[in-house]
Amino acid sequence: MDNLTALTLLLSGARSHVLVGSKFKLQKFTTACHFDLNMVEFLETQDQITTALFCGQYHYDARLSQSALPNLQSISASPLILAAVVPGRPIQEAELCLSEPWLLHMDVIATVMRILGFSTSTIHTLQFITHLPVSPEMTIAAFNAVPEHLPGLTSLAMHIVKGKVTAVSTLSIYLGHAADIFLPGSTGRTNHNILRVLFFTVCYAPFKRG
Image (tube, rainbow, N blue to C red; front, side):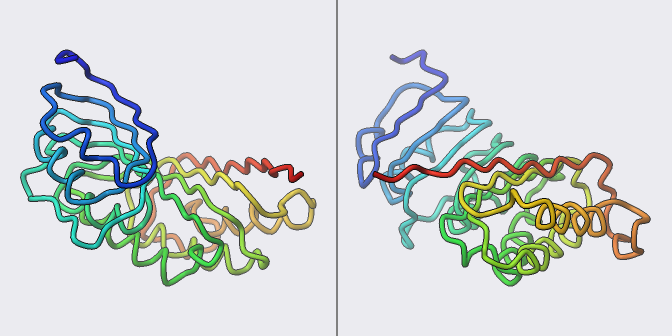
């Protein structure tokens, strides 16, 4: 499989050793393997990847060299993996995966936005995959950090995997405050932002139990 350019490897856990020594040069890579030392060793050999989706757990000793993944433009990952990968690379599209409701907090989001700001390119597309906290106000407070740190953003989406947003009153709160934060000229709070297209997508897909 030396000519392989796209790979989806949904083996969860510490399985990335199977990739070490591969001869192929990927352009698209999706994996649920842990982001560990073996993953780093593999990624150091992949200079053609432009799109990567990391679903695995981050290991704190995993560090990429500055020369790794020089062409990476689109990434989907948890905050810790984003912190390990984004700085110094030409990321233009980012997807932030928040596995717990408490991660959608203003301090966490502000930190992640600062990390995304270390991309060597302008990030124009941002998507959140998240659980909603109980309070809509907490969610809106978290999103206040986005336009400040990503002034070149032109597309924003939020995919909600769990949480009530179906009530008209609740949805109105989200959409109304989103317009205040992201649409120029709405409240005067968006001087940093040049957002032209807003996709505030609420995809509620409850899981059935039993």
